[in-house]
Image (tube, rainbow, N blue to C red; front, side, top):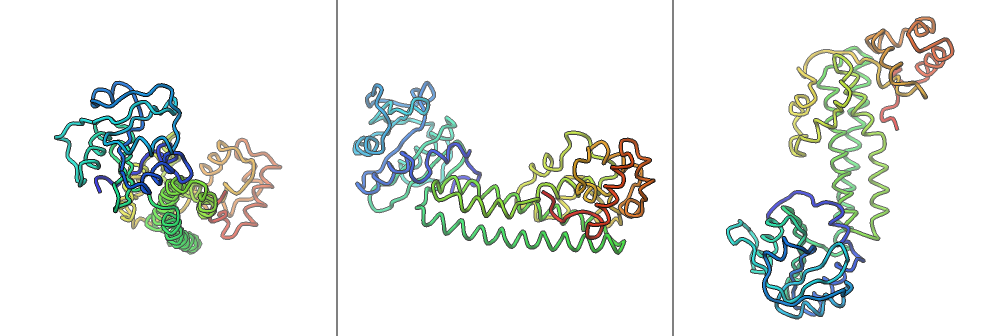
Length: 353
């Protein structure tokens, strides 16, 4: 495999089961001819193409692609007009571009994709039944829908395990907060596991796009498992920073730059969001508790956290003390106090919506 990065979803959608191009690949498999198809047109393709012939206003259909694939050369599809532009073309990408592919067709496809940044589909000849999509510097094997469903089910099971581990980490953090023995390590571990859940959900979204009509059930299950996870990342980050994070300094902005394999390293996650040293004993500021109070403006939540400083002091605050905070008022103070009294551990739901 040349690369392991994920192609843009709009590219995958063009090749999902049930689409014209996916059906074309199936027909080409059946006739055993193989194919090399460039999904774009214009100067970038023309400069690297020789021979063949041009077609004018020929609508794209799977049957036409399959028939044209019976010739030796490649095919060019105009991605803007959804028409077939050229056929029986010889592509001439830079031969010095490194490739790990075997076979002339697949080596040419990868080099074309790397040199142009375009999507290129290579379909093997009789006997192999392999279709590979190259999109810029990415490589995806187009698998049969039943195979994709099996992969999706395996990933959903992994996602369920990750979500259970996240929920366990939240329960443990809550308990340590109540006991007054929480450290930054406990908070970072929740963020770490939450980010792993979200990364796996993103991977499933890409797989769901490949599934086409079979995708909704996978997407629904993944969405259910991700409920509230993004919120808990931001709220715990706010809870344990020394001060309110600057506007625009979301934890996601920094954690999105961390590779998935590095998310398994607690120290790496802590360094990325500035929650160090890991063994420092700390107390939350009350962000998760206040997030459970409906229609409470962000500016008022921050004013309350500035005044009380920790969840322990917020938990002990009277209605009158809450009323003293600018922007609260008697009615809102009473409502805040009521919500704090109702919440387990007085700090809010484990994964707020």
